[in-house]
Length: 367
Image (cartoon, rainbow, N blue to C red; front, top):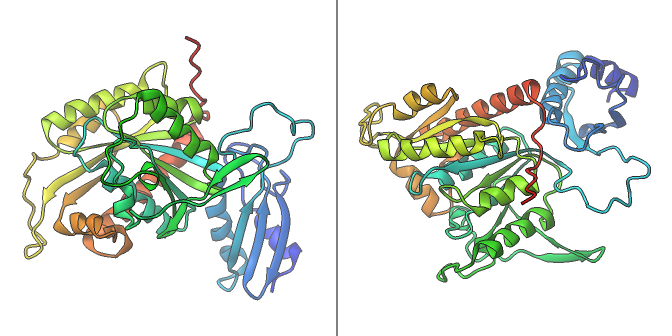
């Protein structure tokens, strides 16, 4: 076991990227426990939505081992936002106060594998040690329940302080909520725009998401009321746009990127993901067949001046994994590793975005 003084000395080498001071001097450490199971800490950020918390947590784990040796193990790092006296009776409760980064996963058109990317990316982030949530906001075509083999799951609802709290499904290390959990899979969702938007608000505000490093939001294809509802309800850290190399998909991807970059929305585009980049048959794993065109996503990324976060091949196991509720990101296959690399690229982009840009603010619509 290590003493509190030893741990604090190690933590004094961890600096807040924005404030330029170490987290001990900033008073961000409130509790320290060291036992047989390892070291447990509680971080108290000044802002509940501090965008640097996930990178600080990663740095803490790395620094503790470097300073105290390989036997120093972090058992748990809790995040407890600072309580400001006089703020307890605010009229509007802060939405998702314990979620550090909210990532919109979008596509210009349907059929490009957006939900497959969202599901596998969420699992890959969880495998990397991050706390992750996935909100399936594709209201009219929710496919996330099938990919998690949870089509029959019905969320528990508990009531506290006169408010209903919806308990997400937790599977593969990811907290999940979807419209599909509330409707029969065989029934079409025939809702007008306001009804769909209101249901999304409920999943956001009443979902018991807890502390998350990343909340991925799987949006419907194209541009719609759902997109506006999301940016009105929460400050979106950034968006990723999914496309295939096809010209028709690329043309729609341009519209998606332009929407997020518009003056009214103003959400940073973290990058482009090219899905179905090439076909590789199982019996010829080294062969690549460019069925939908070659490097269309790369060329578009260069044209629109956004990073190409990853290229995901068209492989039968991806389809099979999605259909049987065992996404490929769960394993260490060639395709599974492609999603792990995508997760690393996203984390790097988010850290860059949070370092270089101010936090996104919610969209205010006055008319």
